[in-house]
Length: 84
Image 1 (cartoon, one colour):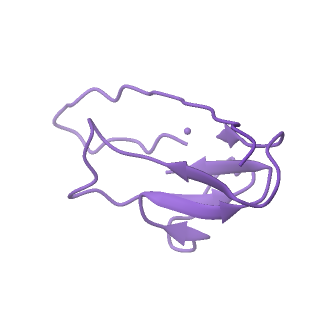
Image 2 (cartoon, one colour):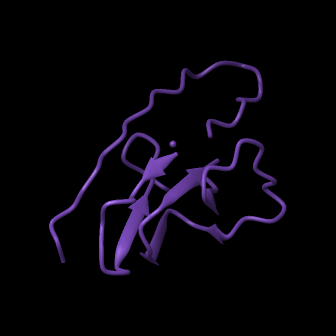
């Protein structure tokens, strides 16, 4: 509603080993009211990928207990969100 946006792009190189999760903290601390949204995709697609979101700047996220699972986390208050 306020026109507040932020975009962060990260490149993950494809290799034969299991990738280490990247943990794309997104600061929404200047956006009001509580209608923020963060989203993720891999090369423009979400098919075949799991996205685990955590409220706050979580240095060691536990993917067994995310605050949200999916590509788009909506209705968010201002603050930081961690993606794995």
